Structures are given as C-alpha cells and as structure tokens.
Length: 84
Length: 306
Image (cartoon, rainbow over all chains, first blue to last red; front, side):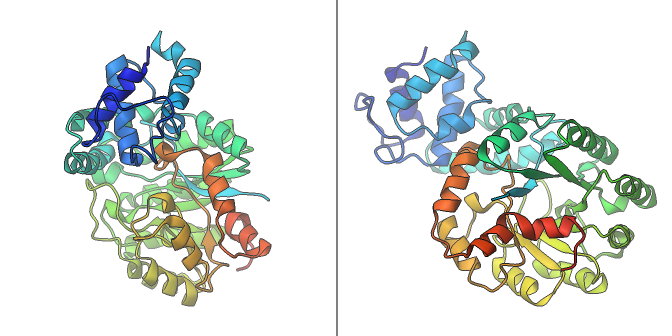
C-alpha cells in the first residue's frame, strides 16, 4: 500500500535536498519539490522496488501527476490490482 | 483537424535488441549519479526500460493515440541486425511490423527498415513488401555504421524511386552503443542530389543539427525534416520556443510532425502533449498548422507532387 510516508522516503532518495517529514498531501512535485522528468522516472523505479510492483503500464500517467494526494488517489484507483 | 504522428516505434523487445537500450541506460545512469541519485543501479534502469518494451502488437500505442485524436501513425522499423550481429533479423522485424499494421490497418502504416549492407537479397525482400503495398516508405539507420550516400544504399533508393515512396533516415545522436560518425546532415546531400525523384525525410532534422538541416530543406527540394524528439531536445531553449523559431524559417511546407514514441513515454500522454502544442503560441496560420500536423507527410506517402 502506498502511503505519504513511503512517498516521503522515496523523495529523499531522488532529491538530494529533500527533508523527511515536510511532505503533505498538497505538496506539488514540480513546483514545490523541483521534480523534472529524470526525478520522476527515478521515483517510479524506486516506488516499484519498495512496493514490489510492476508499474510499466502506468509510468506515463504517474510521471504526469501533479500532487502527492493526486499520486495517492491514482495509485489507489489504478494500481491496486497490480499490487495485489 | 487530422493528425498523423509520422515518427513512432513499436515499444517491443521483439523488434529492438537489448544492446540498443544498454547504451541508453549508461547515459541515464551517468545523469543520476551526477544528480546524487545513487539508489538506482544501471541494471535497474535497463530492466525498467526493457519491461516498458511490452506493447508488442501496438495495442497500447493505438489506444493512446486514438484517445488523443491522432488519426494515423507511421511506425518505423530500424534494422539493427547487421550492427549488433544478432536477432531479430530484418525479416523478423519487418514481418512483425506488417502483422501489426494488418491488426490495426485503420491506424498504422510503416516504413520498412533494412541495413543496406545485407545486399541484394535484402533489396529483393524490401521490393517484395513495397510491391505488395505493405510498406509506405524506407527507414534507414546510418548510425548502424554507413553513410546514407554510400552506393550500397542506391539499390534501395532506386526501389523507392520506382514505387514513389519516401526515405526516412535517422539523423543526430542515438544509443551510444552505435556510432555517431554518420549523423552529420550533409551526408545525405549527395544521395538527395543524385536521386532527385526520391523524397528524403531527415528524422529529428528540425531538432538535431537543425541549422544545417534547415538550409538543406530550404534549398534541396526533396529534403524534408521531422520534429520528432522535440520534447527532449538539446536546443538550449524550451521545445515551444525552438519550434516557434523553426516555424519562422520559411520551410513550413517541409516540416513534419512526429513524436518518436515511446522515447517520450515517461513525460506524459499524447493528449497532454497535443494540448501543449495547440496551446503554444506558434503564430501559425490554420493552413500551416494543418500542413505540419498532417498534410506535409500525407503528401509524401500519397506520392503526390511536391
């Protein structure tokens, strides 16, 4: 299951300057965290590893999600079957 | 408005060997290391890329494009079998593309790819699939190790002339597991001059080495440029600014829309990309926009006069 804490942890792996515990549901990946396409893909790679899932069908959608809440909602709706 | 994506590839391990992606993984890894992303290995990057090459029949590509309003798509089938000395063979690659086009005949056309160093048997095979109407053009990949003006290519250009189909050749950089020696735009000019009755499309030409390509397209009647790869261009400005500049060069009748999917796959959907294109202020007339998105390429594959 994907949680805010997991996202927070992965952000710390793909962004040198990320401080754990500062993430909220409304945090924007692009504007607030400074994500670019490289960070986004690295994020998905580590997400797959952490949750032991194959998200190759969802990569494009996941990398274009704007906020943490948006990611949590997309994952819960579209990736639950993958994760099960 | 009708839209043709004139430059796509099947995302399939059946048509592209792992060696091609190994080189790409090296570059991504170097970028991650420099950015301090040390939690990902080269093997993980390669594995991720290989897993994403799973749209063997083009079903996903067609679905995404149709949802975005893309009317037709040209699949390009580069032949890497001579360069990497391994399968898939050119016959396997092209036969697979023929099967995909038959499966989705309302959506896909394809340009057949053969490394010209395979010689006469390959030329005979190429002619057979062109004659039967299964291929709409010839895809050439010089980074495999030859100049597009090397006489070994001429039998293939003669077939293109006879059947009035275009040649599309890769230009600019590619996987570092191939050579960059033959990516200079001027290498096509001797062939384009000799085969004045064949139309040549320089793939990525409006993006890579664009100044030289624009001069070629402006003054050589049978040279055209596609913009594929524009979302990840190395032009030093945003792709919107770059395209806006290209559109002011007086070659709007030579510019062809293409994405290079699945290369930009991780940067958003076709729908969001098209929204950005139509939302950008390029200052193009409706007629020029139609030429760019549809008519320029459609003329070439319909064998209509230039």
